[in-house]
Length: 279
Image 1: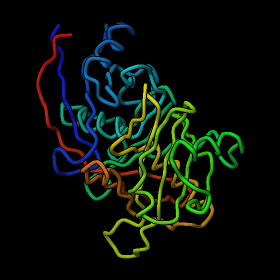
Image 2 (image 1 turned 90 degrees about the horizontal axis):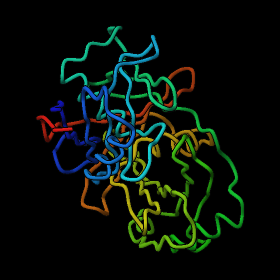
Image 3 (image 1 turned 135 degrees about the vertical axis):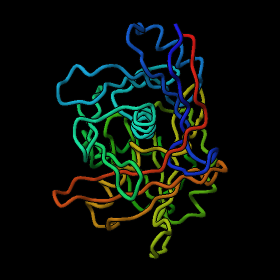
């Protein structure tokens, strides 16, 4: 069966400089195995499958797959899928918000300054990381204690551990060997620049997938880092985070905070591939 398909570059307005996600529209009837196999074949960090919602409060339902597992939630697939759904003619029930159903529940999106933003789910694990575990994380990252400002769980689903390092040079020089543990680390550094339109934070995301891998631009991580760093006063919203510099990308993540304290993650998106897939 031929199904509508898009590949969307997220957290950039210039194709090739963000993080791509494959989006299969009209996915009704696909089995779990068929979704998993196709996601393995695309070999992107995430592939999503759009389905009719089963929750009456949602506009659409999305399932999110990496090449080897299904995720309850992820940030750049959320923005990329919503962009693809709207571009394909999706009509939200409300004028001012779009509601996505996913494994983590309902996620609200809206447009701010003509870019999609989503309210990041609250962290389900935060605070101090066990000493043995964080020592292993820092060893894998190749960091010494004097290069680390702070660490914290920053887990809103994928399992991120946050590491704040002393400066951007330390961040960019990282060449981790992810062989001791199986978890995900989000490493960040303050840029020291407080100017409108200039990133205040630079981020890198590492995980073990049969060896060390780095994600170009990561919405879920930026959401959980924001909850941590806004919560302890290290940063103030709104701010921009950059990610992917060390990979030749130019990702930009726009972080804002609502009056109720909710953290919103925004980014541009551009469609690079638009067609049909036989699936």
